[in-house]
Image 1 (cartoon, rainbow, N blue to C red):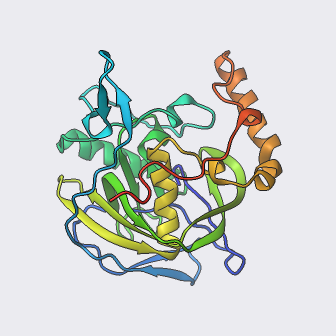
Image 2 (cartoon, one colour):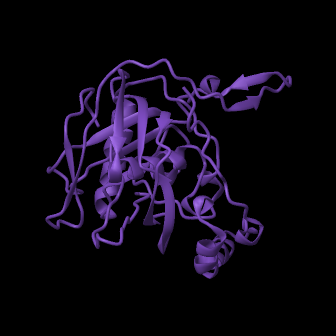
Length: 275
């Protein structure tokens, strides 16, 4: 997810990178994996929602601050192209991502740049923190080719509901180059978001599209895909994660901001199940 994510099932050998649009009505969308003939269909029902996710922080005076109050400033949305993929364990991937309230030409330029990075990295989806922008924004194109398919943009997305049924898939992520492992996620989700013009809409995702969204949504919540792995699965990629931590230290000259040895599995993402 560009962060691109590679998703595999026992019956599918194709790759999937995240997705999402510049329109407020989403009909049936087909996801194609590595240009193979197999496709996953999902349906989106448009409606209104009043959901709020109540993650809390503190103001300087110690009073509580709702996540909805953490608004992106012009400085937060300033960028210099070309954007580059941020790799684990860069602290940007764990930082709080601010809500976008200004829907202007600069935001459209940022979206265009994100799509450009996504296409150049052979991805079909990308979240803003993966390119160093700590704002609540994700983009995707199921086809993964510029000029083909449907470009989708989601701003300030929220998960209102999710299914009890969970499915296991083999996932990967551009912020974790060369690493893939099994992750269990809910089969379907109900989502609320804004489009590139700031219009609010809601829709349902199921199957593979729901998984792709959840991977990208986790990025916007500062959650990484290995946070959701069992200890057994995590052990299978522990050496690779440690190699990325060392790569970060060699590149920056600073200690890794986190270490997989101290990792504890996160049982649920912020906002899941809230409505």
